Image (cartoon, rainbow, N blue to C red; front, side):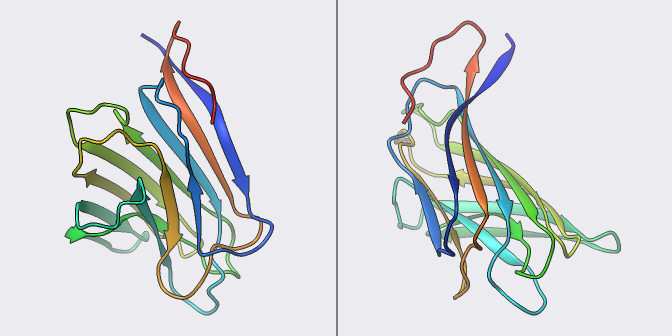
Length: 175
């Protein structure tokens, strides 16, 4: 069956903030997709990780595995036992806008853990692909994206939340 994206909510930042949260996520879709476009407030060099926390749950039930490349070299990592999941790298304040696309699969299922797939690119030409696991059978009803460290998510950055619905279905009301 063909799948369709339906817009649920969008947040465009009027001020720099350390995090954004989508709450009251409707349960009538198969998957969720969040598209981030923006920067951090960090100056200087380097990249900044964008982190995900589900249902406000800060317990140690997240893990992620990532691949990164910059056109010259490649690297990988594995991280377990965290109270967050890394979903991508975002650009510093002076760089061009970067993007992070995160898919939360089977998010309303209450019998399985939730798989998260994410890919990102930023002005330091770092591209990453990450697979993560939220080790809980709870349905996902809220998601928080936040920056590591002391820098914020920059003014003008946008987070757009979409639900993926099977063709011919009518999902629950939007949040």
